[in-house]
Image 1 (cartoon, protein in one colour):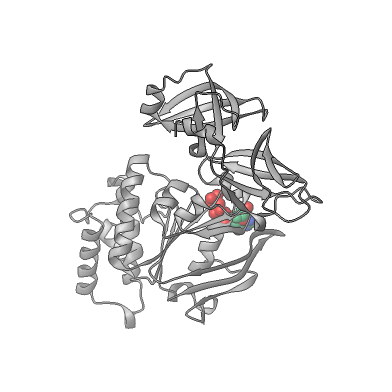
Image 2: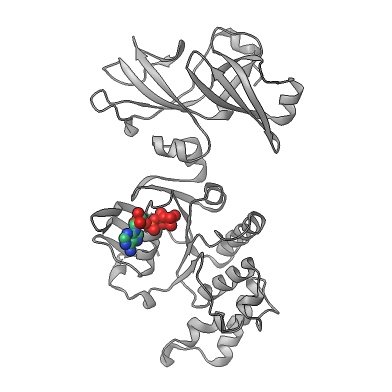
Length: 379
Ligand SMILES: Nc1ncnc2c1ncn2[C@@H]1O[C@H](COP(=O)(O)OP(=O)(O)OP(=O)(O)O)[C@@H](O)[C@H]1O
């Protein structure tokens, strides 16, 4: 049941909510659509559900034109953030709804519906609550009812739009693990919309990063974090310090520090954009030639991680670094002290000399090698 979107575009009054999107969703996959507000995630989901139609492009399911299939015949289950349950129906009646409204010819018998609803309520751990009304449930319980209702019609495809968006952090985390479990147990194909990267990275087999109606990158959570394909993904996923590099005489420099040989073809003069994650900045209390001198401006502890704000005069900017909280304590880190900073891994893009824009296709990972002096590093 591979679903394939090809060159899908959707415009609203001249504005491209989706702009030539290509994506294949394999059977059994859990795909997260991740992106900032307005990036086109919901529009994509609505088209899959049959609630909206593209202006151009195709959606096929195993080669069959899905756009020609009526929403009700598509076998999709839908859960929205505020997909209101019917207030005047009990939990059981809500879950049974999709089956009861079927044409008589394809409607299961009363007994079959009751058995199926019972099984679903057990599955979403709400057995015993079938006679309650939605107002008598917590937010997390309501979303589980919504999920049971979506599953009642035995969908080929489960579509979820920020289903846990309105819930508090603890419930969210518990429900997302539970959802992942359910997905595996039932062998579902799931598309999940979120703007919460932690949620996407934890849940999905593949993450689709969207920006302004386009797909910036599709990959496993690991690839998205470790090999971000574009400057947008570098900035959107995780934390990253942004640096401007100089390309000069066949080498790349960040301030006075030579990082590496210039990896790009001519012209080998100009500038590049680079991103370095806080955990890829190595620190030393000893002054080293191969590094930037920095003044520790601020340290704060968040859980087990110490976040360090470093003022680097040679770059004219502040960098954020990280280390284990216990280690920071052991090292006696305190504001005002001088450290040497060494970037260990960077993602770099050359800037087009004419437009000044970064060239995503020419992306390189840099792993600078420094002299002997680095042996004394902390990590
Ligand atoms: N019916 C509509 N009429 C006009 N513009 C629309 C319509 N639906 C969506 N848009 C616009 O299309 C763009 C993409 O919207 P979409 O809801 O797909 O984004 P999103 O990534 O889901 O955002 P959010 O995370 O805020 O839900 C937005 O700029 C939105 O304003």
